[in-house]
Amino acid sequence: MASESGGLSIKPMDQFQVKALFGGDISWYTPTNVTLWMALTVVAASALMIYGARGRALVPSRAQSAAEMTYGFIYNMVKDVAGHDAVRFFPHIFTLFMFVLFANLLGLIPFAFTTTSHIAVTAVLAFTVFLSVTALGFILNGTKFLGLFWVSSAPLALRPVLALIELISYFARPISHSIRLAGAMMAGHAVAKVFAGFASALGAAFFVPVLAVTALYALELLVAVIQAYVFTILTCVYLRDALHPSH
Amino acid sequence: MAETANSGIGMPQLDISTFSNQIFWLVVTMVVLYYVMSRVALPRIAAVLADRRGTITSDIAAAEEYKLKAQQAEEAYNKALADARAEANRIVEAAKAEMQAELDVQIAKADAEISAKSAESERRIREIRYSEMELVTEVSKDVTNDILRVFDAKADSRSVTAAVNARLKGGA
Image (cartoon, rainbow over all chains, first blue to last red; front, top):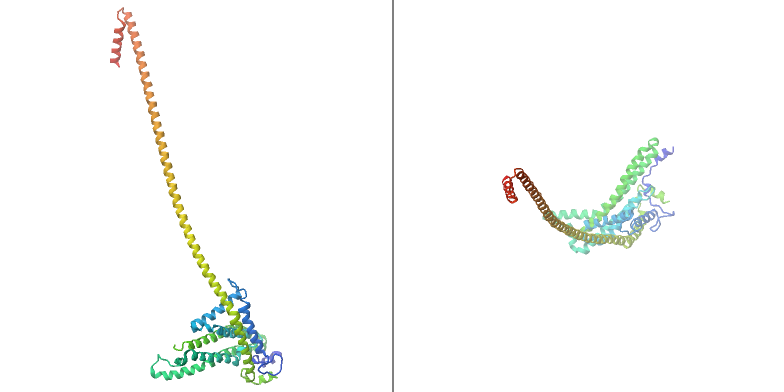
């Protein structure tokens, strides 16, 4: 009976609802589950990077080693992908990576709220990256930044066509940048919820969806980290275009 | 309340009424996270990494120095060993020479002793042989005198002696 009604009322999208923590209507300043899970993201990132590395030991502990490896990983990514002169933006990119990584990972805790599954959040991040990188491109290179759209290695006749394509793809960047992350997060969580709903609906054969959810969870763990990586490395690529538009 | 309003729409992500709330808290979060990371966490880790790199560099330099010292010590040891070997050879040679000299002296001494002994022996042999001759001569004289007495022949002792000596010399 209970399983019957549970099977009929799978609501995979309910987990994405924004709810006020203390009830009442949601206005722009209301503390919501968004507030809670974003705060936890800050706490988790600080726990790794500050509490984990608190020993400042010459021979690092495991947590300090993890913090240092995260630092080195992003630092090398910025240096290798965006160039040596992009290192001054390393704190910004690191902040971005830590936010997306921990928001994704914390979202995998059962009953958690995944802030990065909301297009509003990822779009703000992506458009912030897009606008600052574009502004930076014009500030640093002036009109030479437009050379990014003028493929000088192509035949002259093709260049206007290519410029149009480049321009469209440039403006498509923030959209794909944000939808990729939100989509990956939302899809994974929704599928997990659907499988979990099947578990209560199938009765004796409950173990099939449970195994599926287990496998899916491992996959989602991978996706959470990879999406954070992808989001960050794309930011580095866009930054490189702003710093060196002649490429 | 909000829940019922949200569930009416298929995707809560598309509920525009919550956007301002999300964006506000996102901005707050990002600003806080940026300051925590860029002011506290990253400088600290950068300092630790720089510190470690410095320590490793100085340790490698110290290791190079120790290696050099070890090489020098090895050279000194080899030199000492070679010196000791040469010294030992020298001592062995000296001992050999000394022993050889001693041996020569002893051999010479022994030779001298041996020759002295053999000379003495020869002298004694000669002595014995001579005394025997004396005896034979004496006996021969006595026998000759006896024989002469038996035959009542007269003969002076001087001629008898001469005859006996001549006979013994010829016989011998």
